[in-house]
Image (tube, rainbow, N blue to C red; front, side, top):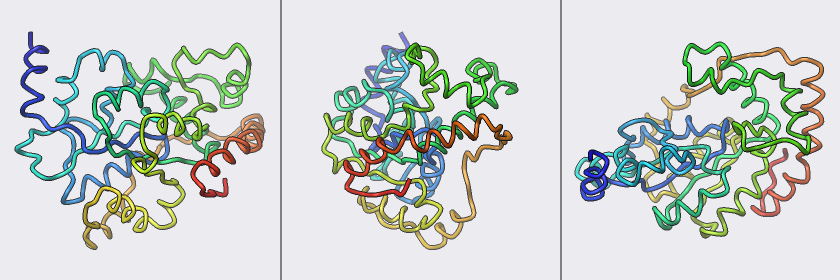
Length: 271
């Protein structure tokens, strides 16, 4: 009954997101969301940044009212912008169709990271979950070494239907963006390189603000942001020779996939 009421009332009183941060995983989406949430024209969600409505069936099945419940009321929002920052959205093939169906022609931001370092960072995160006190995180821990994980993903028997670590496939960005371009005009998706955040944060944030048609961050806010880092992994694992060997292998493995990305974006990232 409560879900039915939400489904009827929330579309009338709740705002929906004005833009999405769709990925990639371990590419700096948390930092971008936190930076933007300090912009005077952007309002944080009521709950958490990763709503994951479109990629988790158990969330999507709860309906539109459930999704809108994560956003502020239309009155509180006023003329500010709200955002759903779920980095898994970029990867799963069915998602752009659902976004188009439910949100229409919405603006989206994709942050990409060099795929080998992204893969290793993701493995470090999942591997660290083995000792996490949170039962949910511990249940999805990856107990394999990095070398073992990559070796398994390269076998024909690898099954992505299991919990999708997919350290390799998540780094094939061109095919993920092409999937979105089947449903959205490329101009509606701003693609950023994670490397640029470290090299020229101000330029990147100005680019995002221009894309969203909002003013640039005030200088005092920007100076504060330069000192802050969000969701930086506290886990450090010593690379074994076998892990390092797989890292070097992946650098060559990803070359054709990176070249395809550069051609798609008409931009070269020197990965």
